[in-house]
Image (cartoon, rainbow over all chains, first blue to last red; front, side, top):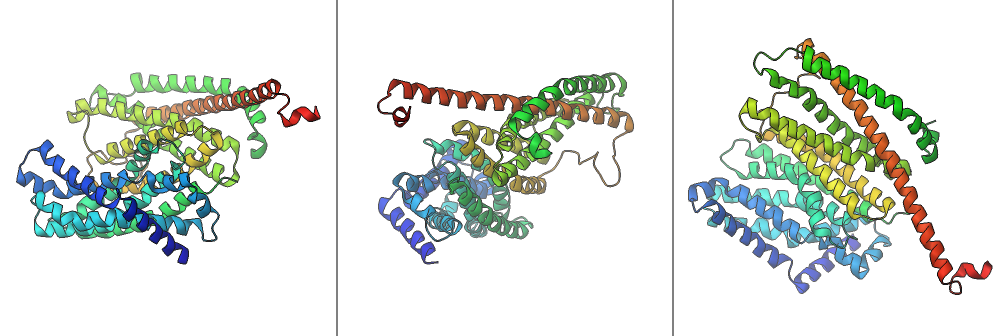
Length: 218
Length: 256
């Protein structure tokens, strides 16, 4: 537990001091939300109808952006070797890194979603449900992404292949996330519960698979 | 028995003697299946002659999924027993499975044009197959980026197993999302809903496709074993040349 908290604290400190992760992810999120109306045209009815979908696509992309550095930075400066040989199980340490990464990228997105919903002319209920769905669903994206990040940690150019590996696996999260964000559907509530299940499942699969990928082959 | 058969040397021997009869069997089954599918099977009363696309489309879809299962089983072999032949089997299966998935998608869209009036609809089954194809592409990309075979096999098997856990979830969520494609009509508890005159050629074609898949897989595995031997020989040769060029610096030179 001490190791877990220490690692979370270290990663948060790194993110806040080095800069370029939390704030920049939010800027990227805003950028995507701004660009889509340029592609679709400024029809407010259309935008408010597909608003949740735009928010989810934007969240998916901005989660992906910083992900390739999740383990790569530690691999490069050698701290990953220290983590591998620490007394705490690698799974717990991976979970700590995932939690820290989500606190820096996923959480700000979920909290800022109502604000961006205004740009898309979403109704107040839709903003609330979108924010809730993002809050529940983005951890699943980070956990699945951690598997890709661990697999590509030692690769020189991991960014693109990370996206190719991870994006197909995020389809269920996207489907249930968008469904849960739409308050006019009666399936919104079961979809939200399914999203919770996906997040919990991804947390288990993601941490174990990422730890297995990082563990040195004997 | 299995462990003896899985030794690379033994594998190269038995696969060499097995391949010719298996090829003949595949050719005979494919000939019989194509004859049944193109000549004997009646045109559908609604779809006309286009129904014959099914005899390629459906077996390709089955094999695309079976090869993923084969890959997942081999991935377990890689992770649990660290067996090099499991790595080889995994690596050989990936492009074959991807090719069957692509065949399924292409024939499906060719069939969709006359039937549904469009090459592509965002229907649950089509979309799941597309995602399976994308997962195959990711696996192929990962094989290509990691140079060392053993490290690559470990990484790919983790990805394959994560995908294997996810594929049913993807399937069910996509079904929940939207469905237009006809439901399962061969493997059902209440018996197949397809007429025997069409079911029989379909099954023959499915067996022919399976044999074909086996042939390709064995050939792919043989190629991979040979490729690894070449790689090993090249490494040994490089080591030897290295030793010969700087005799005084090499630790082996003193003992020689």
